[in-house]
Image (tube, rainbow, N blue to C red):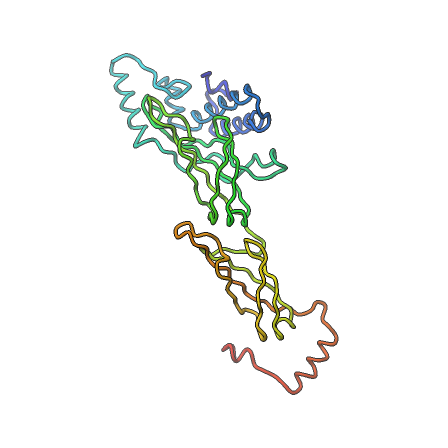
Length: 317
């Protein structure tokens, strides 16, 4: 592997911010989705990702600058003297218990590839820089990605395609009922290990987009549905939305704003119990807009002989 500084077009005095900016620029230019099937482009992207993975890790970068590891992150051997033993000690301390990645994903929630692919549809980020073992025998590092999923798709289950740091694309299954910020682990899809050890994992964080009228509490869905004055007074059967499509709901005569009805099994899948939650429909009585002249006249006549104190009943007086 070539010098990672040369690959990213940097000098050894480059700051961490310079490294990020250089990687972002090159990744946008050479990302495999821009030129599908172009083997040379995919190899270039792999080289760029590997260079960023090394230089974005301050410990690995320092060891590379000191000549302790090569551009691929492998140990340089200097014979059997004290220097070699000291390096081995540092390698063991650095490798830790398996070299798993932290939550320092480079992209986090930025999702800056979204303006390049599929007409702006959000996609998972490219390779993050987890801290992993860099010694001659170590498990590969995990890499963090993120995908954005609409509320209803997350409730029903869906798939999202991400591009891995090695240039491959893979379909990620988002199970039904996936919650916001849930993390999906793809075994063996991280950086390769060294010395016969296995590859790390790809950690995909799912960001569920907010919905204009659905909200979620556990496995239950809540929605506020407006009804007309005549539907509230006389009762009616109306159609209400659910995450699996509209259903008929019977409104009892005399229903009020705040009345809540339950639709059994119309929530989302609880991954622990494998049972669907419920949907709760809160009614909201809405008057005509603009006001209806005949309704106003009727209420003037009606209120002369009839009245009821709703605030006293609610304990507000």
